[in-house]
Amino acid sequence: MRTWMAVLLASAAVISAAQAEDPIKFGYINKMGDHPWFVAEVAGAKAKAEELGAQLMVQDVQFDANLTVTAMDTMIGDGVKGIAIVVPDRALGPVVADKAKAAGIPLIAVDDDIVDSAGDPVPYVGIDALTIGRQVGETNAALAKARRWHEDWSKVRLGSIEDQKADTCMRRNQGAEAAFLEAFPDFPKENIVRIPYDNTMVNAIDVVGTTLTANPGVERWVFYSCNDDGVLGGVRATENAGMSPDAVIGTGIDGSRGCEAFGSGKPTGFSGTLWFDSASHGATAIGFLHDAVTSGKALPMVTYMPAKLVTAANFAEFKDRLGCP
View 1 (tube, rainbow, N blue to C red):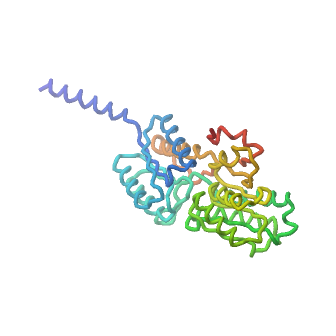
View 2 (tube, rainbow, N blue to C red):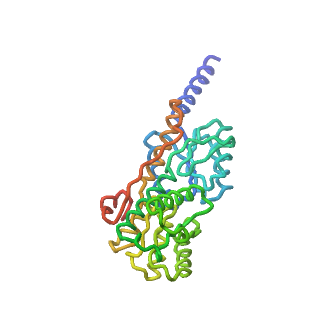
């Protein structure tokens, strides 16, 4: 009897030791895993998890709301201790926040801020959408002034390339527009052209191409959008239409198309991009979750990540960090 008891106790000790050595598991849900931004972001999250000795479950939901909810359920069922999420739609915020709360695990939103069912914000790591938009507008305004476009607005148009279903994107555009108009209060409001797109460069090329055809008398364009895809797509459309790069100004956001825009060294209407190190977004989110689980440290409610303006002039300095070949 004592022998069996000793065996059982020894077995229990082995099991307990093994369980104690099991790494903490976290989940990472992102909305567009094949986009360069999210490829880098998830890589940063994975690297941080490895550094901390944690496991990371990753799910790319490709803007699918149902898959997002399923991924949450699966990760919770698999025993994750916290989840970082880039929602495909901010309307999902209350759903995912309440699921995490019911499971008793911390949740942190990345890139797109969300609220729970009570309207309270979920801890957030990412971009201050309105502020980054204003930086775009200020940059575009400075370039327009340098080219003396403000002396005659008659053949100049602002092209607001808009993902109208995405609140975060629209706030970026609103910030860009507001800053530009503050720099030039005399800019005619009727010269603002709103161009809906689906957040991809291919679609931006198509819709801006159609817009150029519909505005044959316009000689100069200033573009702003949610991301690099929107702006570079707009620029590509002007190239396809035979417009000179000197007749186009466009500042992107995120840096994901910097290599493509500046890598050839050819003149381009893609004036610059406000680059964020998206890998640091993923790493920061996982670091905060780890601190919350291991130390009981409260998740910071808002963590805004810094941006750097990348242009053709300083591209070489950022080339490696942008992941260019």
